[in-house]
Image (cartoon, rainbow, N blue to C red; front, side, top):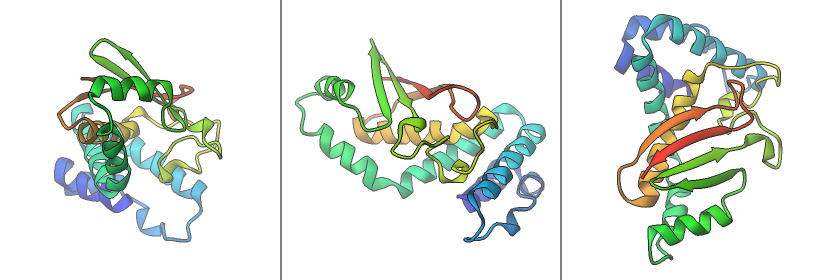
Length: 187
């Protein structure tokens, strides 16, 4: 995931920005503790926020989310197969609202589907579903820039499940101060 961040920084912000944002990443190994990883990520996002405009940093992170979705095709595939068991998308969404995946909930208001992640309700309370922030202390916050990665994942997830493009907006984020993450998906 850290390597993917570096690739997207190169792609959208350039080598100079990548070098500054990724400073210290070479010290992270497979045996690095979760708290240290989360601390580094928080610092990297702070550097990203300082170095590039909002559009560019969101583009970097959303593309990280697209890659994460590609790595988690099985999750999307299972939900897509589940959707295909229903006669219509509306029936599927109604069923998902009644019994959503663990740690999530759906609320539909017309053509907008509000998708919530509540990481604290997982079997082991989490700050974020992303493994990079699992060690983030409860009293610390991370810029919502980081959560555009989840926005990208949510976009690819729902596009795959629904079989058509969707527009996703990040409304709120658990790691930046809210109780849960909230995304508005325009169907």
